[in-house]
Length: 196
Image (cartoon, rainbow, N blue to C red; front, side):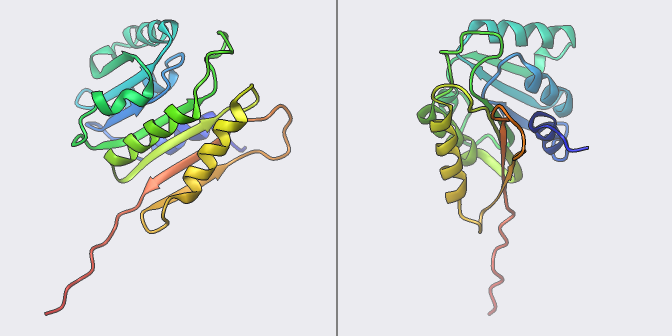
């Protein structure tokens, strides 16, 4: 059976995450991605998670505490566009994930924005290791959602194929704007052999 965008995002992460990896949850939300990645990266890895809503941070912290995973995470009550000030540019990042839209069961007027999302995407790509992945699950059925979807599509489409593989995963026969998943994978760039 085909996976939903959410389940597929976890499959894409599971394929690459290993103990010791450092990862970013750019949209903490209710904490499911943070918990999932914290389990995969082990005690020697680290998850940096961002959200602007206190209820998201508290929900995530509660889930991490229940599963004894809090010590391998840093939770930031600030926008993902600030990750460049928190995560050192020299820190290799194995994966980054976004769930774009609004926090489920909360104020639908508090949404992710194209400008801040683009900044966060750029910061993650600066740090992404070869074979690392940046995943964006874009919910766009709300006001402002189409604008962000267009930005993500344009940005991902413009990435050079010599450096990145970009996947788009979408159900095209479903109603109510099912989310669209984008996965950007950094290629291993082989250096040319110099003959003498």
